[in-house]
Structures are given as C-alpha cells and as structure tokens.
Image (cartoon, rainbow, N blue to C red; front, side, top):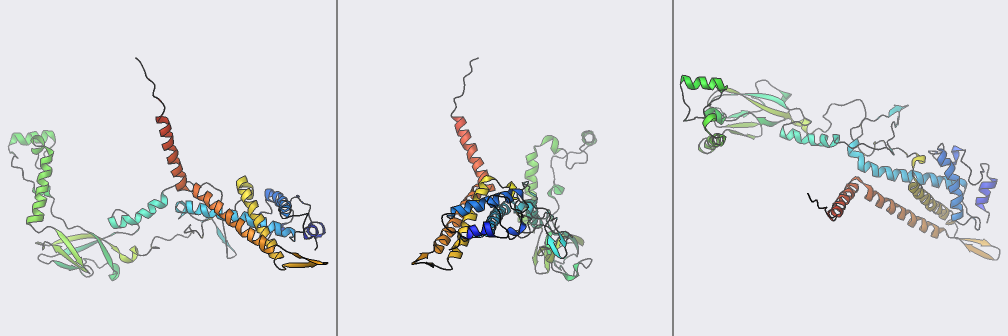
Length: 404
C-alpha cells in the first residue's frame, strides 16, 4: 500500500513541511481562518500531531493535507457554533429589539457587527417591554392606544348600543373593547353630614384663619379623630350598595346596560381600544431598520480563533482528531480487506468510525455540562451558595470581648 501521508507532504504540488505555517487559502474549504496567524501556525502542527496519533510513520495514513486542515477548521466552527448557541440562550432576551447593523449588498444580506466573544451588558429593556402588554389590560400603559368615547345618556333609558349611539361615529364600525366606563356614584364625602358642624361669625373667622374655610365640613378636623371620617364614608358606601341600586354597568355584545336607571340626561365617557390593534402583534409603528427578532438573526458570527483560550483549543484539537478518525474510517471502510503477496490485510475502518462517534459524543456531553455550570442561573445559584457558606464560616468565629 502506498504511503499516502508521505506522498501528500513530499510529492504533492502544494507540498509543505510539517509544522510550517499555512500560506494558501485553498487548503481549507471555507477559508474562514486562513488569514488568522494563530490558526495558520496551529493547523500544520495539528496535522503532524494527528498523523502521529493515527499511527504515522509506523503505518500508512491514507489522508491528504486538506483532510487534516478541513477537520481542524470544522472543529473550530463546531466549537464556535456550540458556544454561540449557549450565549444566545443566555443573552437573547437582552438583545431582542436591538437594531441590526448589517446591510444588503447586491441583493445579499451582509452581517454587520459580530457580537461573538463580546460581553453583553445586562438590562431590563426587554423584560419591561414584555410587561407593557399587561399595562393594556390594566389601563396604565401598554402597546395599544386607548381611545376616548362618549355616549349621550337619556333619562329613563337604560340600554345603549356601543356602535350606533356614539355622539360622533368612530372607527367605521370596527369591533371595539370597552376598557373603562366612568359611571360612578357621587363621592361619599359630598354627602358627608356632620352633626357637630357649627355656625356663627366667630367660627367662620377661625376657619378662615387656619385656612380651612374651603374644607367641608371643617370642624371635624379639630375635634374628631380621622378614623371616624373613614368609618362614616364607608357607611355611606355600604348604604348605597345594600339599600340602593349601586352604580354599575354590564355589557352583552354591543349593548351597554347602566345601573341604576338614569334619572336625568348627561354625557357618559368611556375608554376603549380597537380589537384589531390588540390582537395584531405587529401593530406597533414599523421602522425601516431590521432588529433582532429571534435566534435566526442574532448577530453571532464565527469566533476569532486567536481569542479562543487553551481549554477551548484543547476541545477543538480533540474534536478534529475524532473527525480525522471518521474520515480515515470512511476511506478504509471502502475495502475491508486488501490483498498482499501470500496474505491479506484487514482494515479497521469500522473501528475507527465507532471510536470517532463515541469521542464526539463524549466531547458534546463535556461541553454541555460546562454550559450548564456556567449559564446565568447556575452562576447566580453558585454565588448564593458561596454567600451562605461564607456567612456560616464567619458565624463560627468567636466574637471578642471588650472590657471597658
């Protein structure tokens, strides 16, 4: 059998010496890292290392130089993709809505800023944006415009059509949802009767001097505790609810029914929203710029190889070795036996491929466990446990005695 590795490095038109830097961008399929000096220095060294791990020079290794460089580039891309995917999980909520800086060139979208390997500052902007939707239901904010409407109420008429009885026709008959109707009983304080309220010029002058002349009734603030006022107001409200028809309303389809039956003519005000605005998630004003929406367009690009630390490069090297085994196993698996003079040689293609599958599975598990230990939740949990252990340790230290 020909020594393929030897042929590759000594007889190939693109031959290089083992351990020398890469000089041609054609040696890796995508060329993402060929211009990275650290990658161009490490890739040939990995080729030499991997060839020897696979048995060279004692046995033939049927791999070309491009196989080794392809495996190494793929390993870097795989590590970059996995780390970035973990970062996306941790940072997506903080990045959603951020404007994308990419642009279209000749009909193709070109990514702008690459946030891979960059620190993402924690913020609550997206959390607050999510909470805004609850503001729509409570009437204190939200993402839907709350509009004002008016109904003319006639004496002795209890039922009104929300779509036909508007003072001014609005919304062209679009379905609306009533948020709030300003139909309340008069404030209890307006019917606040104080049997101890006095009269006379002297009392009036005293109230004027204290600045209480516009308060009604005013004497109570001088002689009675405040809780009596609260109890009296509460009694008036309970009286209205239990002994009289309390002010309320109910809606059935388009019909609004008022309670009690109106006794005079007046204008009734209410807040409403258009239902189509509420159920349209894209109802907010559109912008001309693109923003981060989900995991598909969050701008995590390929990592810069020279910034990857040693634990990361160690993982990359082991993945590249496993991938090289897989490639070599595929090549040797084409023929299970090779005849030689007076004998035959059995190739180990299936064994190499099985080893590659197991090694890659172990590497994925190793990286997954690292991500689980270093995600935001796990780090905060670890910080909490450290604080608890520190407090326990400090509690065991005897307190000094001071003798004055």
